[in-house]
Length: 176
Image (cartoon, rainbow, N blue to C red):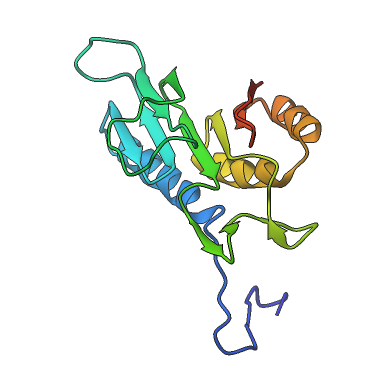
């Protein structure tokens, strides 16, 4: 019902998943409220969404160092080195990937990010990380860019002023 701003799912068992934006939006909202309440120098990590406020309080450095997970790493091991480390303060890092939420059916790898053009799991990238000022926007963009052609996605990222790191299925890495 567009006038009432509501959604009704007619089929039993249907569900609406707002995971592509809700977690990032919530992390940003919490970070902003905590900051407005007077807390300084903190980091919120919400599983793929990281929000930083001010540099670390110990004064040892001017920014937080955030490791970006290598999507080809063995996730059963705890000591995998990061693919990349970014330094930031008052920014967020949001990653979408095909390597955490997946299952195998008949030998076929199925993950949770669906390409709207094919209605199948997107297969352009293994991982995509957005670095910017708003975790809600970053969460939205990481999913959108994950299903977009690289050149089109790069142009959008540059237009919006966010940094992006793409990891392709062959292991190639590209950045804005």
